[in-house]
Image: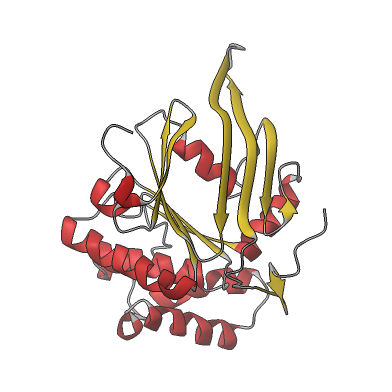
Length: 254
């Protein structure tokens, strides 16, 4: 299938909030084999569609399959069966090199552990993806500074990670995820290492990014108060979707 022209425009992901889904997965299963040859099923046939501009929280207990699903959505893993289309392009069967290209151009990642390089300033950490993409140092730093300002850290651009609080480090990580202007931001337990107040501040950043459909955000969390800030909730249990709808409509029984 040809790449959806809306996924990239002049080398940058497009932010089209039209009706066509950014993410469309159908019949996704995932099985792993242990070193002893035991077959371990994790996902049992997931159907999910996410339109551009949505803010979706994915919840589930440990072992529910949410991390496996996130890895597939992020092109870090491939499904055993089923189809995954990202921006109109089928990515289910792409080779590792092709998946890496999709990740670099289309997806911004935010992780629980920040994953910042300790010997580099906040500015240079944010600029790193641009350097890998062949962007010149001056231009890369200009773009990185803009993203730090967008996340409220412009005045701390020259500090090292160990000179920043946990919440500030996560803001740097968010700025780094945004610097390539991705069509999609995937956040995996982004508040897991933070206190309640700082967690709220980080979710505020995601909510601001998503305001008016400017950025598609998919957030995996085990915290109900964090999920409540999203506009849609997908709940997993035993590798199946048990709830998919408005956050306000989800109850503890789902």
